[in-house]
Amino acid sequence: MSTPFTNPLSIPVLGFCAYSGTGKTTLLKKLIPELNRRGVKLAVIKHAHHNFDVDIPGKDSYEMRKSGARQVLVASHIRWALMTEDAVDEAPELPHLLQQIEQDKVDIVLVEGFKKLELPKIELHRAAHGKPFIHTHDNNIQAIACCDDTQLPSELRRLDINNVEQIADFVIEYAQSWQPNTVSLPLAPQAPECGCEVDTSKTLSVRQGIDNILSFVNPVSEHEVIELDELSGRVLAQDAISPVDVPQQTNSAMDGYAFKYSESMLPSYTIVADVMAGHQYADILQQSEAVRIMTGAPVPAGADTVQMKELATENGDSISFQGDIILGQHVRLAGEDIAKGKTALAAHNRLQAPEQGMLASLGFGQLPVFRRPKVAVFSTGDEVCQPGEPLKPSCIYDSNRFTIKSMVRKLGCDVIDLGIIHDSEEALVDALSQAAVDADVVISSGGVSVGDADFIKLALAKVGQINFWRINMRPGRPLAFGQIGSSLFFGLPGNPVAVMVSFMQFVQPALRKLAGEKAWEQTMVPAVADCKMRSRVGRTEFIRGIFHLAQDGKLHVTTTGAQGSGMLSSMVQGNCFIVIGEQDEQLNAGDTVYIQPFADLL
Ligand SMILES: Nc1nc2c(c(=O)[nH]1)N[C@H]1C(S)=C(S)[C@@H](COP(=O)(O)OP(=O)(O)OC[C@H]3O[C@@H](n4cnc5c(N)ncnc54)[C@H](O)[C@@H]3O)O[C@H]1N2
Ligand code: MOO
Image (cartoon, rainbow, N blue to C red; front, side, top):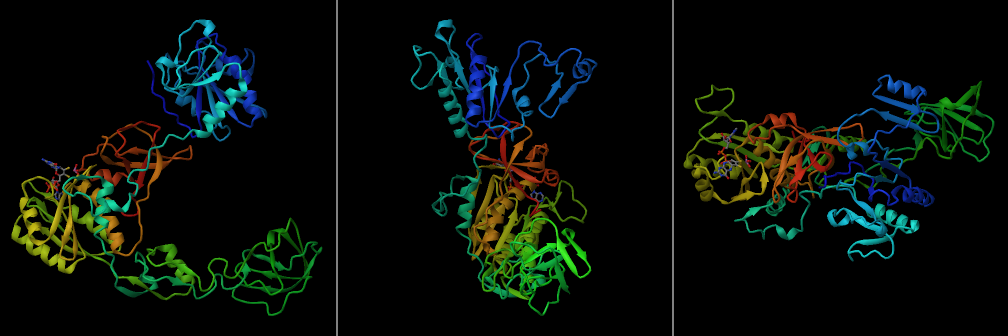
């Protein structure tokens, strides 16, 4: 019976298994120096079945442990050893032991023992011992090291148990071809042909849905010129060409002294002036001269190097320098950041704080941006009530309109709020027809599944061409998408979390393209799962998660708990979606998952 094993490290782990007496330790004692000789740094984990000790009675560390310390770490300048008292009935957990290895110090971990784990291994076999093979019931065997006369299945790599060089070759080959345990990127962009050609009567994958929608989006073309201070969140309509060099003059990066560098530095330089930021030294600095200079002040003609104040000693009118000096140090050259005439920022970039700051540094007072898309938003359903008003029996407050409006505004669009449209085909036809005239995009929520609110489908059929899709995802399975006149229509599912997930996956890329952004893709970041997660092959799961930077230097993520598609609290608690792609069914703690952080939009 085998036990599942997941390697928690980002370096390979390779086991050696054999019946006792085959010579595992003998082989490892020869293999380790051979690998060392070839520059491979390795760690070894050895499973001992009995009560062993590495310490000696009478030594301080031994006595402290025997007095009851759960862990004793004894260290010298040559080696250190951590002894942990862990009296459990079962075998120690290999993933836990592996996590104790300092993986930045070694290239591979060799494991002796742990025969029953689903761990990649080399089997050692000596026919003369008359013991059975292990590979016949363990398909984690990568190779068999045996004597020449042993018969083996042809698909198994044969190694000579007496040829340490050959076994070392195999270990190196294995380490070089090993890939860390990752899942493939979910929602990877597909070839463009899957756009309009998708059979929309079928269930679509998330990627097919996105590509299909994007094929209908024509970016806005109208520009307007906007003051620098109002540019936040807008999309640049023309390349911003730098009218100046940045920095405009060669200047000092430190408070200190500017002078002309020479291979053999003078013992001291004469201080001829003070140069403050915003001022200039009018003359050309001579070889034996220096100026006191402030950060940001122009470096005088004739000078090319700055020494910081802390490494200089003034003596009356002269200055001497300490430490090594490199030609050009602490000098920022004119145009080194952005040269005059170069594209400082290309059209189609969304302008946020860094872009605004850079445009300001170039002296732009206003810039051309695409007009904001207009987005009409409404909710449907007789049970849906306006927040702030008394709640009628059997009703719920409208939350979807508020989550949608907030996300639409964060994407730099203008909102037209159409309120709640109650269950009447006529009211809906009127609202939709007017919305399509006023807005580039119309977004509703509710009434897109197979429920009884068929009047929505009838109304949509009267005003436009709308497809009702089932997306292979959870939450957010039903989705309506199409056109009303020249406007795009999104019918998001009613459940509040489904609304947010569908918005982020489908509406967001469409609004970004409409607003003028180019080739935007969701940010996907790998993280280590801290708990088990289930999905179904063929379906993409958007689990609300909380990620954090853990002490191992990696992002770790766990779920927010219950995942009902009406539970908005999961969106409030969470800071990301854990995206389990179509090909995955179950992910275990320690596996790599991809997350979509969503702080930007929420
Ligand atoms: N027989 C089936 N039933 C359902 C299916 C299915 O495939 N077969 N799909 C389920 C899934 S998945 C979803 S998601 C929902 C979506 O249905 P609708 O888009 O038709 O939405 P409604 O039925 O109108 O509402 C669902 C749920 O959401 C609440 N809601 C609606 N609007 C708002 C709002 N503005 N603010 C807050 N909450 C809202 C509504 O009260 C319902 O509780 O269908 C499943 N059923
Ligand atoms: O897909 Mo629905 O979105 O489960 O609530």
